Amino acid sequence: MTREKTEKHEFQAEVRRLMDIVINSLYTDKEIFIRELVSNASDALEKLRYIQLTEKEIYDEALPLEIEISTSSEDNTITFTDYGVGMSRKDLVENLGTIARSGSRSFLDAMEKSGTEGGDLIGQFGVGFYSSFMVADSVEVATRGYRRNSEHLIWRSGGDGVFEITKGKGHRRGTKVVVSLRQDAREYSDPEVIGDILRKYSAFVPFPLKLNGEQINTTEAVWLRNRSEITDQEYGGFYRFQTNSFDEPRHRLHFSSEAPIDMNVLLFVPEDNMERLGFGRMDPGVSLYSRRVLIDASPKNLLPEWARFLKGVVDSADIPLNISRETMQDSSLVRKLNSAITKRFIKFLEQNSADDPKSYGDFYGRFGLFIKEGVASDFEHKEQLRGLLRFSSSRKGEEELVSFEDYLSGMRKGQEEIYYLFGSARDTLSNGPHMEFFRSEDIEVLFIYEPIDEFVMSTLGEYKEKKIVSADSVDVGVADKDPESSSERPSEEEKSLCGWMKEVLGERVGDVRMSRRLVESPAAAFNSDSTMTQGMKRIMRNISAGADMRSVVRLEINGDHALIKNLASMREKDTEFAAIIVEQLFDNALLAAGYMENPGSMVGRINKLLERLSSG
Ligand code: ADP
Ligand code: MG
Image 1 (cartoon, protein in one colour):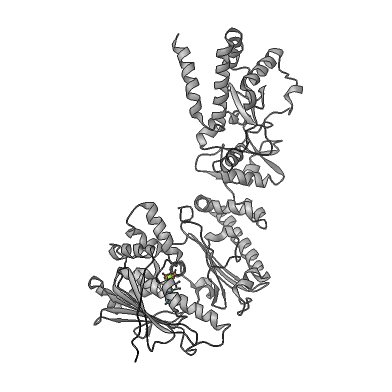
Image 2 (tube, rainbow, N blue to C red):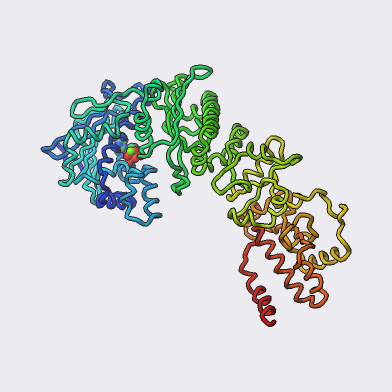
């Protein structure tokens, strides 16, 4: 007999780090390693079931698709056996030697960000297979792939930075994970403890789950059951099982139909939006099944991109079982499912907003970005989605949000446009010069704070034939669009003052005019570029430094204001000093309008002004 050669491998550096954290963590819910290993076994069986649809030659074909867990308090071990796809040598090195899983990657990222030792984050992310080292002295994985000529292999590690792979004998198809427990983790060899844990986390495993020979779950698919017979606890438990999470879903939508497409749909909105919390872009979370067979756990086109925060299951008997994932993605059937389910979900949100505005407001606060993304990118559902947008309003308090419909119903007689104003904070916006006119006319203005909101407003352009207009644009609030030809023509002195100010400011300003809309402010800046809002210009400038995106700004001055009156006479007495005041007046207007790039440049001038003032 030849002695089997043992291959030694080092774990990838990141895995070593992860394992160090896991091994030394004081994390109290170590039991989650059971959920992780059961979910891997279940995944391996799902994969095999899918392969069985198309491949004839499967090793050990007759083995039942089930998971067996056995405990031995004598040996102080717990063993997880599945008859799934198994792993090749390459799989072992890649899957159990590197960070294969996005969950572990997010865990490391989150740890980096939070600057903690990571222990308390383990449960939030689940660290996959490596979580077994929270309780293990060593772990042995015996495995054999589903192909006829696959090898029997044994993977072993003591969690000390290295693992070894040897050839094994006599193992059947699938994978057997033997966890040799640490002394302080003996409880996990107690079948009663394990039974409780399995019932808690793994009740929804879709394959028979046996503990020391006894099946402990029912494998009925929740989404195919009658809604009235499913309790909230069951829904929540299924959600947590499917998403490997611990939260309570904030919404669920369960429906089915037979025509025109057969579908059973169970959707969940999670408690929170992980992208908003800074954890990278999510993969689609609604799995596609056909008659309980998992076709694709994270299908790309089943739902629109913006709906990637949804979790759950779509099961359609119309999906041919032998379809490849690639063809399936582009099939017209998937397009139909996409459209039907998305419409239904949007309706669900509309209903929620009507029935329980507070609940919808909370949803919108966390997931609103996805709705905005949809409005900007999902052509098919844009119409419906824009009704779900909510805004802060000049007429309402900080907390209360309004929709476009609310806005329409509060419009003044003869008002033809919807107004919004973009800025960094509510206070700045409501006290800024652009609001003066709207306040005096009692016209509602929507306040928006994020560049994406501004982008959404300009992509929409209008809502129900009412143009959506930025309240800082030059035309707004000027009854007669061309003041030069209006009855209130500026006097010769006013014209001369404006002309001189334009000379002082030069290129920086498009023009200077007497204002017909200012009430309190001496001057205000308006955007006279009809194609781009100021916020968009700011973004463009950031993207392409050096590009000539100079704002086209109009400065309007308030002839009734003392400062402007004084300025005219100051110009006669001390032109040089009057010019400094004009400069400052302009910068103040830019600042108030939120157009100012670097306010620091004003300091020198302000000091000059103060010097003059303090000289008496
Ligand atoms: P994840 O399950 O999220 O991919 P894990 O760390 O739990 O991450 O597992 C890593 C990979 O190891 C899996 O994706 C799978 O390819 C492989 N694996 C783990 N357990 C098994 C098993 N019982 N059968 C087959 N493959 C497995
Ligand atoms: Mg896993």
